[in-house]
Image (cartoon, rainbow, N blue to C red):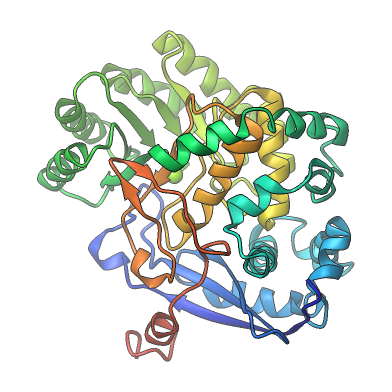
Length: 434
Ligand SMILES: [Mg+2]
């Protein structure tokens, strides 16, 4: 831990995914990109972290990382983790940079990249995968990693400590089961909005054959098209497999309710991002409506662009979500994810982390495993999103078997990209973009 961060490097890495329609939905058609951070140290170990962006604008997140980097450079890992909240606030509450957020958007995503890199560095120094590092931390240290400012009306440090202590009971059994079976997941690779019907059918059939029993499709196109595509998937997966829908915020509140009334025919398990991400009361109204429409079978899910723990707190307090989808780098990195996982546990809502893009699956598998081992303790309703893109660019890519994530074993947060991938896809001077 007595290792000093000597320099922070940031790379603008972009993959040209937009042309094929991979990742296309009602709002986005992106070139999956990473604002990729390297923390160089005097010990030769490099901490890696990134935030995910959708292509254009990645240079802005990179600039934000450079603006924050002086809070990390020159510090030792021991110093950073001696007072984790002080470190976290040095980034999130910088007396000038906070104006650019606060705790939201580009500046917060850059914070996430740096914070995640610091945790990756620590896990590498400890010789443990991130999930294990977190799961083995004493309760006091986990609680001390969370900034409770602005959430104590919903969750106090004592309550968080009690949840984490309770999570020690049966931990070894849960770990043995995960090691044997892997962590449940669902796939989003079957139903991007830009895919024609025959491709949706073929991908659904292939995913079912590979063992997936939960699949997500994009909605938010013409309502008749959404229903037709949903019927195709339902007909391929049968009545028992789960079918989730994702509108990527395109609908108004009443429009969401009207469209879900029609889509209820195919028995959706959740409707994700039915309306604008900031509309907590709107989500609450939609949640009540879909509960009524489906006799409680369908729930509202959101969180991939929820900016911070305060938004999640309100979604939970308003009973607006039945599934919480934290994004590992949209919020301020591991410390804030801990706050959100604990909030979800307090309110009894399962966390199904958002993944996909580039590297998000690599990150969130660690968080889901930690959640299960130490916080949530049940697999009921828990699934990690899986998207089959761009894993080959990481030194420790995710591994799946029969629709489940296998536990990562390498030390760190699985965030390290291959040097040749960085060189090839670096924007604008890598050979792919020249
Ligand atoms: Mg989504």
